[in-house]
Image 1 (cartoon, rainbow, N blue to C red):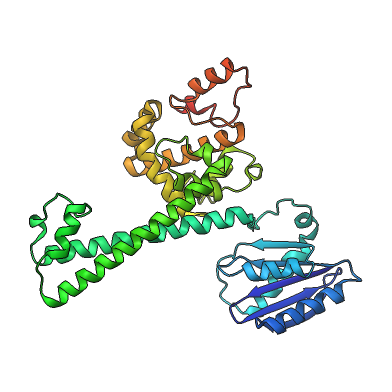
Image 2: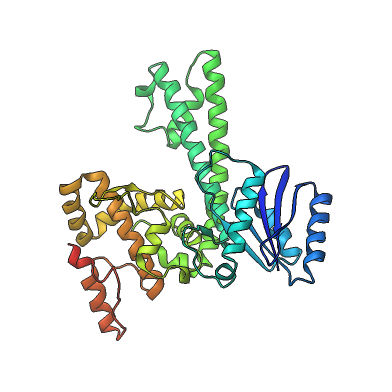
Length: 376
């Protein structure tokens, strides 16, 4: 077996190849031009054919897609995507590739068996459907952010000339206000900028409409997203975004693992005789998922009285910001149970859920959610 470590950049790949004995048999840099990179992987496939094939390890980045597809094309037996560590003080591409190759060879048996390697953050590539859903929801988020910036620019132009109070409606996002914006009198340059903003606003509205139609259609075909849509305040966009950023639910063995995957667990720095020192949340994983959970908190607290009482208790002790993050973490735990047991979201806490499952003759839920009432 050959163990290939790749340090990927936009114009070149730095490669380190080890054999079964752990000896480095090849070190080189390969251009990412199609002809040269295809020739290199064809050579690796040919040289490793008598040794049982080759395994590749590389760090995840924003442009892994083409290389991942090429490795599958050239018969890579196992592909290990890992998260980059903190930058070393003596960093070079060759050292990075050598470090990855050594890491792959030392842990080769556990990695090929799908077992967890302590200290190694392995990344699970999303399926084609999840990758497309992630891209679709990310586009929608960017369009909404751009639209908000354009609207804020229009408001600034009105405030610049003290015209906000002359708007026929309270806000500017109405049909009557739109007609007024097209006729409002402004200096030449400001009028030009306002016309540009209105054109961008129209275009972004059209793009947002197209994306939302695509999202709604894809969400209807996703059983996991439809289950998440039972969360209070969850739309097609939010349910599909969360579902695509969970992927295969069987990866998460405990309710806490999903909260940890989304970076909602506190940091810990204990050393020596110091006591338990918990800091802010890790913020690892998907920032989009944390943003959506933060928005859902507002709706959940309005609908779920049991959770609202618990939130107020945490708020009294630690403040509103920490209490809101605590509710986000509890929502992640609830999502785990919803998808694990195929149970729609139910307001009222664990006792209500337990009674409903007993009435249906189902087994009671076990784990952190069933103990949530004790935390109250």
